[in-house]
Amino acid sequence: MGSSLFGIHGMALELRAARLGVLSSNIANAATPGYKARDIDFASALKAMTQGASSTAAASAASRYRVPVMPSLDGNTVEMATEQTAFAENAVGYEATLNLIQDRVQTVTRALKGE
Image (tube, rainbow, N blue to C red):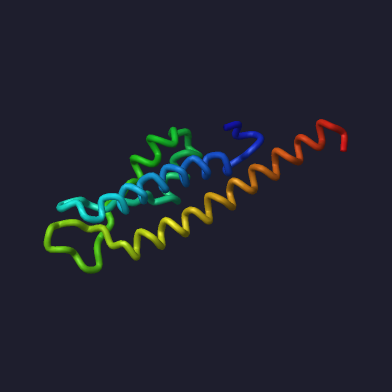
């Protein structure tokens, strides 16, 4: 995404998409013995991207294992309420960021049309 047109929002959208993938994986593996839930430290990843890291490298470097409140006996650290809350919160952020980008595109399109 063009950083001059979308600014930090393009980077944020890429990271939010990556985080949705990580959180989805956690939810999908809720019953997998020994599965360790992960999350992405969004602020750290975004800072890395603003310093030139790719979204993949930034998300990987900012990936953290989640510490469970109530560990399960089988070693799985996924807590569905936590994962669902994080997923919903991130989805709202993704949608808000996408709306900002869409508004920017519409503004540029109107300017190019002379409206």
